[in-house]
Length: 95
Image (cartoon, rainbow, N blue to C red; front, side, top):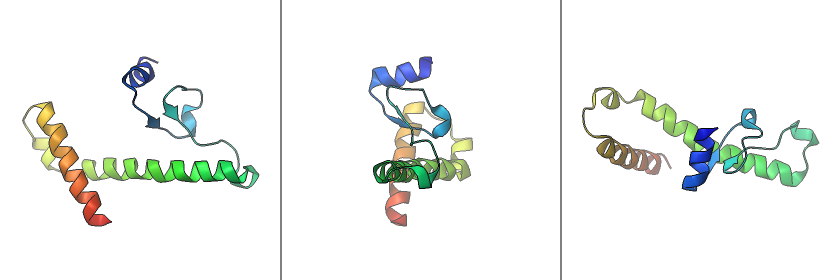
């Protein structure tokens, strides 16, 4: 509960899976139900939600494969900037 309140207070949006129903505020979830029973607008929202989440999932999978981060010994501020830079280069190169 404190985490989602912290996200809301910071104004950060979070795209989550259907398991987070009821998290509210800034946590975005796709529509629940079978794909065939959803209305066209609900399908479009759920589809775009999945595309956004896929980027985050790819980024996390990429970060987990980097050996560099396991042995990195510097301040967290530098690590954040380094990760942002490398992920930007990675995704621009893959598109």
